[in-house]
Image (tube, rainbow, N blue to C red; front, side, top):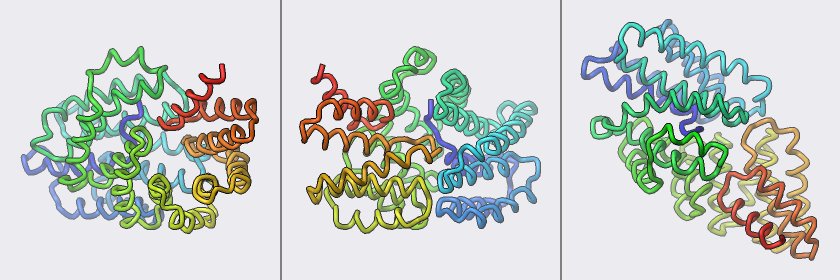
Length: 378
């Protein structure tokens, strides 16, 4: 269950640092907190070399602590998105996670209540669950999700002590219900997990986005994704995407999400300019995304289906070059091609395009649109 992404790394770091006030953490200095925040900001802003330099300071200060390897994994994960290098760098990414896990488990073997050991184990197992889910390795994903769950339960009763726990608990409560709806193959395994609730999860994430210190970025990120991907309420998403895009202007992923939300509320002129930034980035994943956005702008905003079709086809033709696991934008392109084909009376083409969109889609709006058409065509 891909509930908590690798980006939770820094949040877990900060929670464990906060616990030192109760005498529970081995990390005593405030300098390391500043160092970690600095590294995270560099990573979020796609300044990967600068992040690596700062992360090396963590290793110098705490050579046997899981923080270093985990921050390296976090930085590499975003880097793989940026450079379209999942195939080339996945082994290295898993190596960092494994090294961090060994260090976290070593702490637990000495003290099973060690806060850093517990929380790093939570973050590592959740990252592994997410990775294996993206790679379609269902059993590995489920096994790591079950291990994650054991650590997540610890945070259920700690929300009122540390606001950061509203983030992890909110993610769990939302995705434990949403994920099997989107991915039915996982439904039989959900008996291992306690029930959550989508609305409850959203409220908890909103508290984290407002009141937390270290999980604020990720809470905003996930709320934007939820309102775009599953709730289809772009007018709510734009609040969060604007915050992320403004703070981290070099992050093309956050820019893509902001463009999505602006398109959703009909701001086509502004999104066309922003889409050109993606197109001119020289990064394949984001160039492909730009063609999808330009297709939607031409189809729905400018009412130019021929131009829209050309952009959608460029995105689809680029898809084989993209090894990033996220295929949402490709599903958008196929759905757009299906709508255009249907408008021309080319029902067989429309059906084929919608079937392909459905195979790739994560977004509720695309899934419902494709299923409705395919059911009607039977």
